[in-house]
Length: 296
Image (cartoon, rainbow, N blue to C red):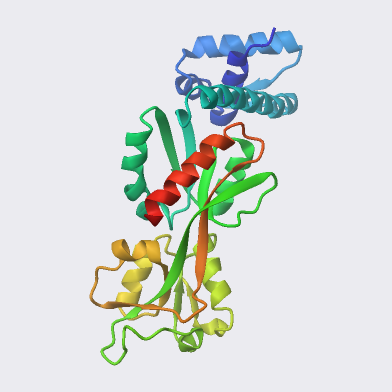
């Protein structure tokens, strides 16, 4: 009979492609993991792993079995999650993904309160780009994601958490009234500093500034807003800064922040999860808790 242990060991071997590292990741000895893989091969009557002196690869059959095993293990996780949710809401492991333009500004505000009100919650945070989060959410590697809405992907549902308006960040100029509302036309001819490709914040800024001539757009190799703001302070251009970032990123007197005229550019930030997840009640409670903390 196939065991879940064997499927988890095969999953670890598929990820690490090394018996020693795979065994370490699941906290067993290498001989024990190797024996379980061989027993699985014997039961199925097929070779799952190609063993070489310096490498390990899944065979074509092994890849097919692994694809099916992933679905089985995901269903088992869902079963455990359902039982835990019924017995004790917001408890146990929860793998949460979050985009870089939100993580360092939102998490310090909410994590202490969430861990205090839900001490049995074992939260694991993954910070990366939206495209990666969406993929890992759909494959079951993440349970939920905090990102700008909407998030592309089949079978996903979301709950709104808060609205994040964009501010214009520019080099301080004594001739500019900081209370004056900025217009998109004011950016014509200026150098618009943007994060590198792949950041949803870049796409959101471009969507609002779509009428700015292309030569004035400057995509940096930067992956952080801190770098962009330092470029603004040095006079290399302007950028659109999410309001949630302002208190942390703009402490330099060389940078001036202006609100935009209505309708102000903004993004809606939400919690996203799989429609098929049995923990939908957990996620609704989490979204409501986050919204209450941020909008209080």
